[in-house]
Image (cartoon, rainbow, N blue to C red):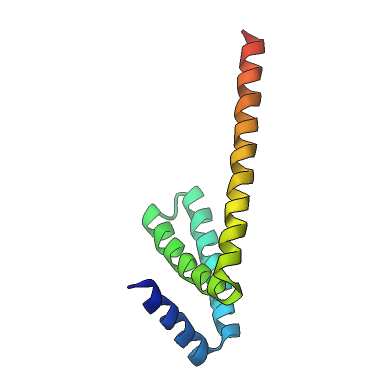
Length: 103
């Protein structure tokens, strides 16, 4: 499905179901993913279940991003990724520094 087709589908969903309903669907899908992850920890769920739930959550996140503003979401995502990169680098440097002092 093309991006334009997905956008049209999401807009149709909002027109038919209402945006509030689709927000509730997003919350439900995120809860289902959470549940699948917890079940995996207990050995009661497989990776296939998790991937299935991730796909549902990604669809819902695309809808929310479209509603709230894709460009701003992308901008914030990039800023958060940069911050994550910096934190990871600092943590790696700290680990390396600690291993050198133990030698």
